[in-house]
Amino acid sequence: MPPEIDFRPARVDAGDGAALAQAMRDELAELYDGLQLDGPAMPKAGPAELGPPGGAFLVGRLDGEPVCCGGLKRLPDGTCEIKKMFVAPSARGRGVARTLLRALEDEARRLGYAVARLDTGPKQPHAQRLYESEGYREIGNFNDNPVATYFAEKQL
Image (cartoon, rainbow, N blue to C red):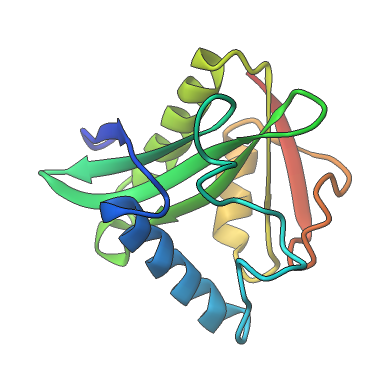
């Protein structure tokens, strides 16, 4: 049974949202040897992209503690992209990532999106397995992310 997580809108640049997003950046910089997630070659995913009207950013709390985050960004073709999905190490292995992904898909539907896209890199095979198990199908490179090797979408 998936954990009961309380998802609420948040900001990627303030409070618990910023803390979780920074933890994700730190982990990816270690995993991908100094990667600058907000560098000029990377797809943009800041407060302008992950906020209204076309975007969103959620923080999930488990027993009152912030344990995960993720956002949505509008793409030029009218689809959305799931960005900055992160689960704190203390909450991993309990179904939190799957619950987060489903909450982001629900938010995408609420915002009127019919298709969600996402990507992940070669050092995150667990993420790719999660996405495939949730019905994402591989597509071509849609966002010029220089680190990603897996690009996928799902009809919502």
